[in-house]
Length: 230
Image (tube, rainbow, N blue to C red; front, side, top):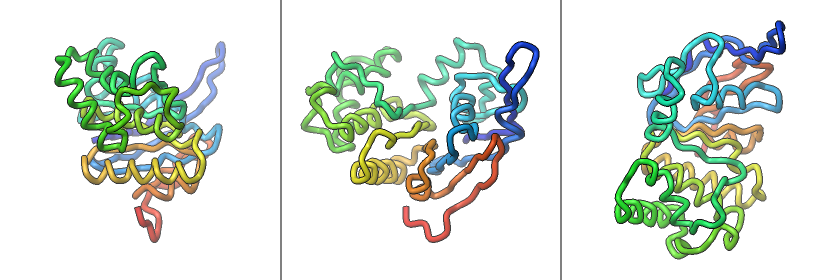
C-alpha cells in the first residue's frame, strides 16, 4: 500500500546540489507496523516529508494505495492527505483552546462531516485510547502521555490508509513511552491500519515488526528483528 521506488532527493544551494537520499527502495504492505530508524542527519525526516507529500522528490516515485503522490498538484495532495494519511507528532500539536474531543473532531470538520457523527467518532476513539472520561477537558489539563493519546485518536478519526508517527515518544519518559508504543501496537492489530514510526531510538524501533534503517541517506537494513515480541 506504500511503495517507495528508487527515491533520491537533493537540496539545492545556488548551483550546487547536496544529496540527502540515494535510491531508496522499499514496499510496505497494508496493516504493517514499520519503524523508520536513523540518527540525526540520516535522511529519515526528509524521507518522511516525501512520503507524506510535503515535499517533491528529485527522482523516483512514491505510491500510496496505488496513487503516485509525486505527480499530484498541491491541491490534490492536500485533499489526498485529508482522506488517506494520519499524523502523530512528537509535540502533539493540539489546539489549546479546543477540548480533547474537539481536537479529535477537527479533521472531520474539514471533511464536512455532520456534528453528531463527528462527536460519536471522536468519543469512540478517545475511549479506545483510554480517555473516555476526559473528552471535555482541555489539553493543558492532561499529562504528556495523555496528550499523545489524543494525538493518536485524532490521527485515526478519518480512517486513514496509513499513519506516520514522527518521533511519537520523543517527549515522554520511559514508562509512558512503553505505554504509547503498546497502544500503537494494539491499534495496529485491532484496526489493521498501517503505521510508520519514525524514530532515532533503537528501543522504540525494535518494538515494530519490521525496521527500515537509514544511514547517510542510504537504506542499510530492511527486515524483522530477531526474537521480536511486538
